[in-house]
Length: 67
Image (cartoon, helix red, strand yellow):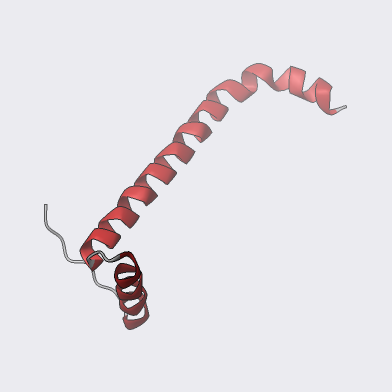
């Protein structure tokens, strides 16, 4: 699926610099940034979900350890 990404001048310059440093296209760098973001936030969401489900189970033990 194609999309248009609108960047301001500073963002465009930063993306262009990063692409030049890595000898890659701006599109490749932007796509990698999106993949990295999705992976990072998906992992954080999973951890938060597990904590929400499991923390109550161990709340009493954690409370005792905190004393």
